[in-house]
Length: 598
View 1 (spheres, rainbow, N blue to C red):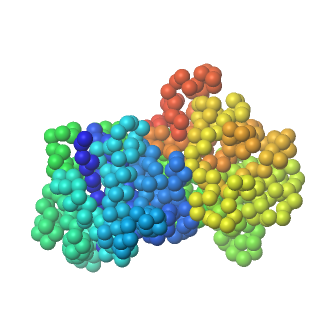
View 2 (cartoon, one colour):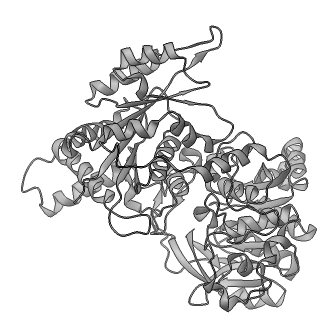
View 3 (cartoon, rainbow, N blue to C red):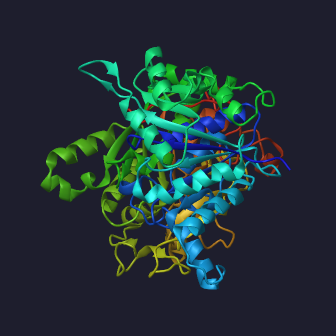
């Protein structure tokens, strides 16, 4: 049996250098060389998972098919590598300590004193080896290479057990099976204009002092490293100049794998892993075309994202990426206007008139409106007002999770006339509960108690936009919610004109709503953004962008001559759109969005 190869990516100097993008790009480069790749993210925090963390604290919570609530970097891995990871691909200190304590309680340690070394460090190594063998690309058997990203910065107290474990692990797997890539910062002092190597020198010294020696340096800088700077780093960090890679600022993030390829990063990795001569040259023709298309788009499409966490774009990272995938498929330059939901409310008009006017100006100038998921009552009334504006003015609208729920509430209030219609999440005593707590939910424990992971939705109406976009009778999408549409109110809502086009297998849980007479007004209980991919944009995001720029008829045209019951026989992407009508390119992507990289 062949031995697994491991590539470890660590970071130094400062956080936020782009270790996740670097690890994803390395994985993509290795995959382009014909290798099968899997990924693991290590997060040293004590939480068991990311599920209970505030988006302001740690960015979005990414949800996997198996219901795992994980770090947003796993979303990067899935999108770059087009794989489906598991909850165990995200290791946290909380998970490791829970695993060790469970073993201690069972008596597995036979009375020994349980310590960080060797028990915790052994558990970390065993976890990595076990998870690395799980196939994630739909094929049988384990991958060839496992890319591991160690979160945080070298020197952090909480990451020390992982550093020690990985040092032991490098000897455990043996020479030729472990490659360490250290991502560090080479800043430029504006006054002097010189690239400074001292921060990276100190970072590498600290790493070596902890028992790990980097094989390759990936240096983040505003521009390519000068040759004399590379020589200096090589001398002081004990890494040859050929193994020093520059990750300088680029127009869009999809150039990063190309930067690695052009600097022969794959050859440096193959040299360490004894793969020279066994792997082919990277084939990145489609990726190169995609990156070039990204740079050439100029005609904008404006989407107003009305949310609670708009102060940090990472809170909606997958939503942003799904919008980008779809906008490039329509050959449009995405511009996202972040609209704080609470700024649309009457209270803000009284307290901060300028913020109120600015929010409404952004909303009214948008080509489409998106209301993403969220928790808590702050900004809910503002989201309801945004849904009302989109419904009454024929503006393309997509509501996700809570965004669908507020669309139902708004419809009940404005169309049916139930002025106090609400969710029991926000008003437990409402006389007209449109949204209710799910019976199987827990009101005492927060972590891992929601309806999570991939669930099947069956279309109830064959002549609707969502079924035409997906091109099949049922879909599997990822969920993360505690509340749902009240089934006792469905008939009344339908009689008033709201169509529930998708339901779960029982027919009691509402999954998709549409307004048939609206240009594009769709709400979904699931999160389609989590399965959007480069070149295969999410069907509903593609519909939103196409409707926003007047291309929806062109997108739907490919289905007009197809009978729905025949669609499974044709090639379709469950998470996107398979055919390519005029002006639609699904094999493309753009990474610009108000300065935010994708």
